Image 1 (cartoon, rainbow, N blue to C red):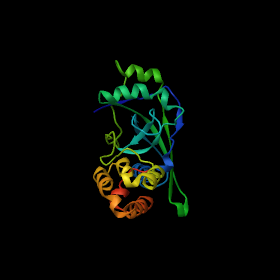
Image 2: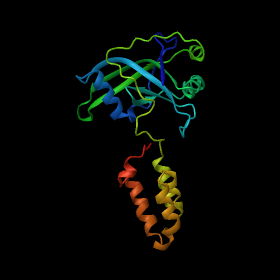
Image 3: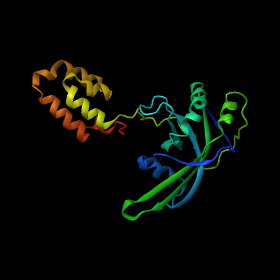
Image 4: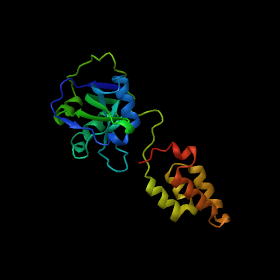
Length: 219
């Protein structure tokens, strides 16, 4: 993997979207940068396109120290995703400055917000040819992975529940969740239980009641 660092993006600073849904990752990244747990920290983030994202084919997540902490706002992402996706196909990624801010909210714990400096789209086009990049990394920098090792495409909890309710006897819910073995078993044998298996499995999906269900990247 080749990571290109834009040392002086031509674009503007914009808020990272969805950071409130990546609480564990954003807190972990912030505490790695600011052990005291509050204040402001500047670092670098990889702009990682997600063409397989079920909600937006132009989605671009922001990775800091190998952790997904949020997304480029949906209104901005289409301006950058085509070039980023082409770079990704050749094993290349782009880093830009990221600013994280943390403050203690008492019982709610550490609250982290962040901004990312988006490059000029024309600058990204230039990266497909000769690039003007900086190779110097700050002391705290660790090369990020494109995805965490246990990353899986996100699944809709609501969709899984509906599939379980209406198509559970056919195992469609489990096929959707990537549990092909359970899906095949339900397809072949659940009719013998007169709906009991479907009901139990639906309750498990609602409650995320097994280790396999807990490991799913829900949204």
